[in-house]
Structures are given as C-alpha cells and as structure tokens.
Image 1 (tube, rainbow over the protein chains, first blue to last red):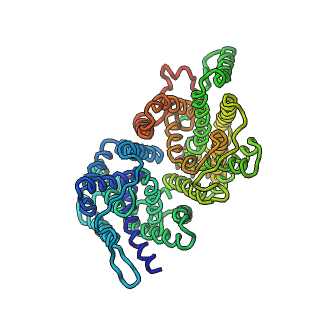
Image 2: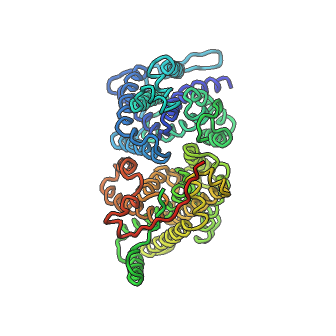
Image 3: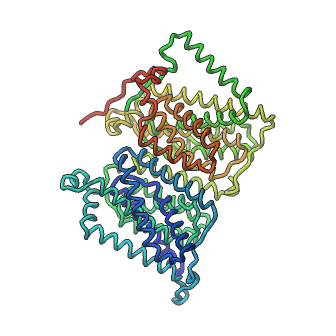
Length: 288
Length: 335
C-alpha cells in the first residue's frame, strides 16, 4: 500500500507538469490548446533521438528540448494563434487540433508507429527504504518536476515579464493601458507552455515508450488535471496532477487495471458538473 | 449571426425548378448503377457525413454549444446496432431505429447535467464523455467484444446491390435530416435555440425553457448521428472502439461545418461536399499524409473562411445560384 502511495506521488510529478502548461495557456488566453499532447509527443521524440544519436542523458536534454519548444511555441503563437485569440471556443480549439494532426502525421511519416524507449544505464536501480522501492529515475523525475514548477512560480511572481503575464490574464485591457505588449505576452506564454510540455515529454520518454499515438492519452490527462485543479489555475494543476495520479493508482487497485482511464474521466465529468472551478479553485471566470 | 434561407435554384421559375429537382433526383438515383464501386462508396460516405454534420449543426450551429465530442453518438449508434443484430438477431431497420433512440436518450439524460456547463467547459465535457464511453466500451468484453471489436452479420446480397443498398439508406436519412433541419430553422423551437445562442439569459427571461430546449436540440443531434453510426456499422460489418469513437472524425465534422457555415441549412451539405470530394482527390494519392492535409485544411479554414462558404458566396457570382434570403433573427436584448 505504501509502495502504491509512493508510485502515485512519483507519477503525480509528471502529471503536474503536463497540466501546468496546459492550464497556463487557458489562464492567459482563454484557449484550450489541443496541441498540448502533440508537443509532449514531439518533445519525447526529441529526447529519444538526442539520446540515441548523441548519447545525451535524458535529464540533461530537458534543457535542449525546453529551449527548442519555447521557440517553436513562440513562433506558432506569433504567426498563427494570435490571429484567432478572442474568437469563439470552436475556432481556437479546432485550430490547435490542426497543429495536433500535422504533428502526428509528421511523426508517423518519419518515425512510423514503432515503439521506442530511452534506456539510460541507471534505469533498473533504485533506493530501498524498508519494503518500499523508489527507483532513482522516478525520484529524479519528481525532483525535476518540483524544481520546474517552483521556478515557474518564482518566474511568475518575481520577474517583470511574469508579472506582465499575470496582469494580462487578469485584465487584458488594463494590461494594455499600462503599456504591456499583449501580442508579445501571448507569444511568450505559449512558448513557456510549450517548454513545460517539452519538459513533461522528456520525463515521459524516460519512463514510458514513445509512439506517435501517445499524444491522445496525454491530452486527455491534461484535460482531467486542468479541470481538477481549476482551469486556468497553473498552480492548481499541481494539485490536479497529484489527485489524478492517486485516483488512477488506487482505481487500479480497487477496480482492476482496465479501469485506470475510466476512473480519471468519471472524476473529470463529476468535477466539471458539480464544481467546475476545480477542487481548490474559486469562481473566477464569467463563463462558469 | 446571420440566418440564411437557401432555396436551391430559387431565382428560377417554379416549373424549371421542379425539372432541376427531378434531374438531381435522377442523377442521385443513377449513380449506384452506373458509377464505379469506389465512387459509390465515396458518395455513401458523403451522405454519412452530411447526416453527422447536420446533426452537429443543430447543437453547435444553431444552439451555440460546440459539441466537439459528438462522435460519441456515432459510436453508440454503431455499437447498439451491432449488438442488437449480432447478439439478439434483430432485423437491420429495427436495430437502426433503436440505435438512434438509444443515442438520443443518452444525449437527453446526460444533456441535463452536462449542458449546464458552457463554452470551453462544455466542449471539454463532450470530449471527456467520448473518451469515457470509448474506454467503457473497450472494457465491457462480454457485451461489446471489448478492444477486439465486434462483427455484424454480413448482408447476403451481391456486392453491387449491397453498395446500392447502403447508398440509398444513407441518402434517405441524409435527405430526412436536411429536411428536418430546414423545418427546424423556421419553427418556434428553431427560434428558441437560436435565441439561446444569441443570449441565453435573455432567452430564459423571455420564457424559453432553456435547459429543455438545449437538451432536446442535443437529443435530435444525437439521434441523427446515432442513425449514421448504425448504418456505418452494418455497412462495414466490423467495428472497433478506436474507429467509431475517433476524435479525428469529430474534427472532420467541424471542419465541414465551419467551411460550409454554422447555423445554415445547406452550409453543412456544401462544406461536406467540398471536404469529402476534394479530400478524396487529394488523399487518394497521398494516404500517408491524410492527417497532415486535414490539419492544414483546418488551419486554413479557421484563419481565412471562419464564417463559412455560404456567407462568403453571398452576393457574389456563385452566390447568385443560391438565392439567399435573410430570416429575421431574435436580437439579443440589451439590459
């Protein structure tokens, strides 16, 4: 039981990272970024190839993939998504799904549907505390997830651009009045979110197999996590991630392995209907 | 939010128009007996999408609730038909009607709570619902065959007749569906749901039972989508969860709807026609680039023709072929 709890917490780190970037974009731009899963998938492939071709340790390649995806995200937002920000739900969602389709096709075309895995030499080792085994890899992942989310928090609260992002998310017009370049902030936010997705993708590549079809599952997880934590509430997404990981882990124990996904979606729908502002959130958006 | 009434070849006098309709009917009737089997299949597919896009048009185009996960009713329709036919040995048409009813009932029951959410939350709820049902169907091995899929009895007809049979069934449902949407657009109910799209609070104040109207609109939408799924299942004789609950299906539906024009009667037909036949020409040659082409098309449509072809062609040369008349629309009330 204790082992399950430890596993759930370690998984929660990845989930939190998946949800944070997704929620960030919604919080600032009111866009459900359906390309989030695709960004995670492409970043996982980046990690795989960097490891395979150049032997770069996956934990080190986090920096590479984050930088790369920041630039990709920035460009996507600057030249395409900025043109539809503020339009109705359907437009922005369908548009970002267009990215998703292109990304999946790209991966399928060049890398086919094969399963690939990153296997660093320390993969099998772990820390034993009594009966509980904590694999070093998962411990590393949890550490990275905690460090990144803390950095994000510091960035949002302590830097000028972080404050500008928060201001934009609170009130776009007022932010513009005090001289914030909204378009730039949007591009920066998308870049940031893509970089977080890339970090999540890299960590996922270390523990799971990498395939072009992995995006769907993680996009679904991003949905559930973001809703649990309160859509648009990036820090709430951390809570969402941990709650989902716990629910899935114990869902498997109680109902069996087949029900892992079902448990997540049932909670998702219940929270959406009963408490759409999320488990820790408060009423914030007029849409509720 | 312009509601348009399109009358095909409306500028032409009545006898000529009747001749045009008759010619269209004869053309549609002749296709399965003259055309190549491949094109008969393409046409059947086209009718299937017309049904689904009109279905999504009711809830999304008219009522303003973007049900991105509407493909769930397609899957439910397909599975209900499959189970009723293979496990209970029911006749195809009885199973099909029941499939539509089950899909509709499902939408009505779940619509009451889910339609309370709005905007992004509603869209996410419908996608979540689709994933949930997909997972449940994949795991109910004893009833649905689980992830392995389920086979239907193979129709005992020669291939040629078989193609024609499904062609006409899809065509008939598509015509009924377009007709229902046409009647709906002019009915009291149609005004009610358009009013909900324009301003839901005002609609409530005016005495429209918004919850009931939304739930009924979604029920109707689900009923037709379920019928399309049912015919699809018998047509393919084999279905599995990843295929009939495929989100790419849903995206294709919305691409067609956006391209044609939301909240118009003929927009979905035009959008479906363009995407289906253009698509067939393009990805007939590049099957492994299909998703990428679809994605590019989606981006182009959202960026450049977000209001749909029906609006774009209005008052232009091509627009003259369809005379468009504006129908008075309930205006949002300013407080």
